[in-house]
Length: 392
Image 1: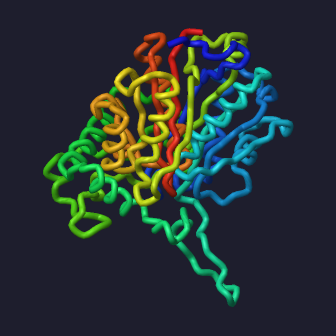
Image 2 (image 1 turned 60 degrees about the vertical axis):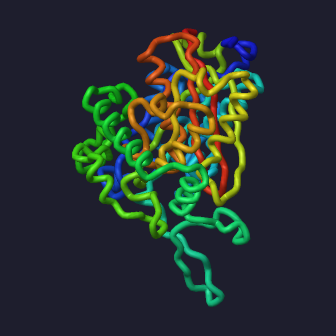
Image 3 (image 1 turned 135 degrees about the vertical axis):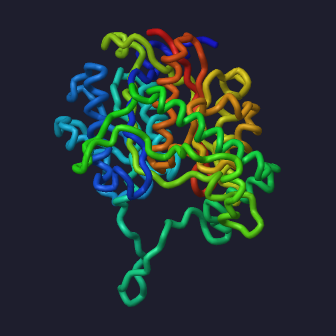
């Protein structure tokens, strides 16, 4: 595959990526609001690339359950960027962070050699309470927004995960085994310091959060087998093979290949293609597979030809169903564990995938290796991006 799919002044490339620790809701990051999670990541990205703060064309940030008010603008000003830098917040629920990166890459491809900070953030711990206004003007609180019209069923995530398991024949045993694999890989990576270079430690006021707190060392097959069905009586989806809610921020620097070289970047991930797709909301977990098939087909690449794969493990059932559909062996995906062990910080999770892929590609150090980021979203959608690691 040709590395430079576009002229150098229009070829998008990701030259730096960072993330905060991913921590359980009401855990180590519970005191920090979304913009306070994101601002240190933005500062670190500028320091890592040597880009002048005023040279940033825009900051594009995904967010799903925040309080509005354009968290991108709030965070960039908190980070010390000049008031001349605007910001935009995008919402495609769980896919928001990856969609922000995709959106920024699309603008780079349009020309002009811009430089963007793009990613996602979620503080589930500090997300505002939400309510509809009753006829009498009083509040009616609700746990989650409506994703699709009532006629489509609008299933909760866990119920949809059960639908996927049943529709695609993903057994309880296979789900549990994949969840255990995620925890073991994440623990091994954390213990070996694999995540250290991509992490931005955060001062929480009560100490410094410098590591992911989700992976469970005592988890084993016998423990997982004892979990009851969590969403549907007699089902296969349990708390053990589902992710947990988390707080985190992650972002990347994305610019043109020409500008990246001018900045002295030595390597990066070229954005070769991206796309989104819609599926039946009753099977909302497989949206990523539809998007990935489209992207791979357009590039003339099969799932088996992709070297690195990061899929957001909201549920083991949907992860396995999507990987099966795209033709990717599950053992080749999420080599350092995923959201089943690390947690799912909604709007941040898609950007975490890209951050993980850049770190993995740099460790492997193999030019022209292909990387695929995939995430499914509430309402029956999915986003995927095909990337290629290259020396610049």
